[in-house]
Length: 501
Image (cartoon, rainbow, N blue to C red; front, top):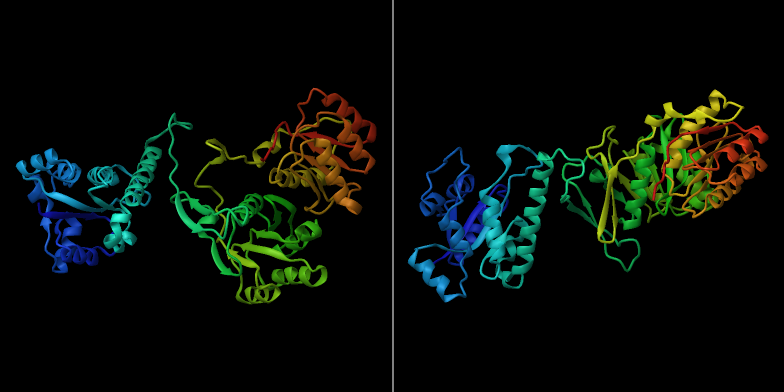
């Protein structure tokens, strides 16, 4: 039987060169609509698909072009089955051995008229019959036509992923359910990483289509390529600094901040964030919510010169040329990245966490909405300044891995001690208080949940803490309040847990 190749693509990249290769390999080409016009302009002979299907051309505004018994049967019949071959010959079906098809970019223009029906049907048929039919959904794969016998299954897998990615966006477009019974989340690979969490683990970054996450605009300017841990640290930093309208800086290690601060400008914020815990800042990731200028870059140079403090990654909205040139001299291997402006409103209002074979889908945890519900539970009331510091502290503790307890400076919006990722709240409290050192007196203790016992409050009193913010809601709240009253420490309940795992 004569061999046919069916070309029907939205993305016309490379299609004419591919058609010429197919022609040279003895394929007769069938094509549709815009693809057919492109081929004809290049002088490439192609059979209009309506001559095969018998469908009226442009019927129902083009909704019915390719779906037909002739096309789907020509793709699907098994060439290795004599009965199938005999039926195909009797029915005068074209033997379509190559299908090149990619779909309307639904993400660019979501709507009823950009839902492709014929294209997915052809792709699915070709991928199902991959042992007989080559299916191409990516123009970058056209060059593999001569080695395709080895790649048939991989091309079929790619085709099914392409369909799933496409259909998942349509499902989301139609759905009004927050948690539908069945859910497929579309993801597209954007970066092959240096490695995952460890050098022996390969890793890649995938992003959702049309996401406005700053990670989608991450641009490598200098230094090391990203690992999976670097991506996690940058994400943590972004989620931290995006909470602040004022200039903010965060230094991150192992997915948890070791210094968070705001300032009158981003340079002051970064200086505070590094000084919050300069020991832990060594080898850390720096994330800012405002562009980096030369003065801010000099703070990293000073950290290197005065404390031999290396920074692994700098990720900022933008960076001036002179600041970038300085950072190149500070450390050759330091990675410098920009990500553009952090959007005020997220394109995705959910948080997703993977647990070996399962996924948790939940609302994004925002902070400011809870401030109005705070309650002072001690006889002594916090000052206006302490309440202001508490608001900063609550945003900061939200970014720290639980169990989390932090100490905030009494005057400056910056962390002084961070106890993160502990299995006991008293353990987290001890770490935060000890890290705060000379700045612990009159500082503010912030907890991401309630104190199950009064031990953390009593320990805080011994260190001279000036005020406490915690969730409240423990059966032992009364004991904690009594301990705070006896020490003369104002304590505020948020009524809201702020776990981050």
